[in-house]
Length: 345
Ligand SMILES: [Zn+2]
Picture 1 (tube, protein in one colour):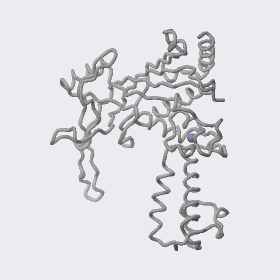
Picture 2: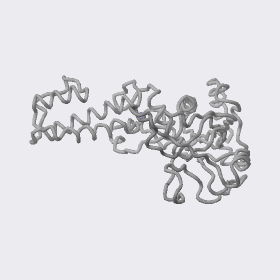
Picture 3: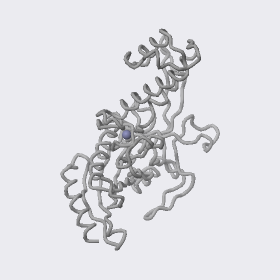
Picture 4: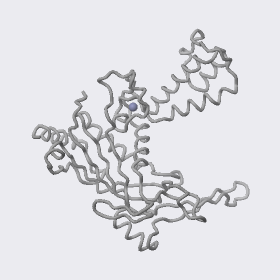
């Protein structure tokens, strides 16, 4: 049950090492003329952090890039009860079904029934025949071939969107952008505020030092030429220059997870699954060409309980180590600490 009280905040500090070059695209406008086709995102000016300064032009990983990637990986992986009918499924499957329902609703509202339309709904959109009843078609338009591409693009947009079921742990952690879905949810199932926040991740001091040493003062990236081989002549064509952050560079950042109930502690387990999935996938662009392999290290998980915010208490360390060393039994410690912390406050 929702308690409507912030019990604590879990902080996950991490290092993220690039095992291959990373390309997270930045704005081309900021790049000098004659530069690369695909620049990476960089700091437009020097940035003062709490404990150090990051130089201008240093590349960084926007929190939104990490968040979006981890969310999408989890949406393919986690099977959980979704939406009002609580079907146990992945978020991707849920959204495909949602898009089918939406499509069928729209078609019935706008078009007259025809056998051809029925066949398209079944064969191209995978809609079950039993949902297509002639009597429910109330539209006055005749369906024509030229209407199909609009149906397809609407369907793809909805089916490919982030989960909007409003009740699964992904919606709880990352939030739901379409608040219309809440209209159909019973009040005790409302997801509450999004729980996770991803900070931008910046190169470690050591990485900045090494890049300056090897590439030159103020240079933090490499250029890689990508080409397509002409199948018939074997010549290279379509040469493009990609800017990348070189392999070996290490970033550091923080993820926080707000805890409103004991059930929310389970979200940490799922978030860590997301980090593991990222290590098995890639970050940024051109992943199929081998870009963006990353590895987490130096993970420190701490709890900031109510005492931390109200009475200046220290944050409590829950875990220190690598992703492989994490054990879900730690969640029990966390639950205990959270309880002590809120009782003692
Ligand atoms: Zn959801």
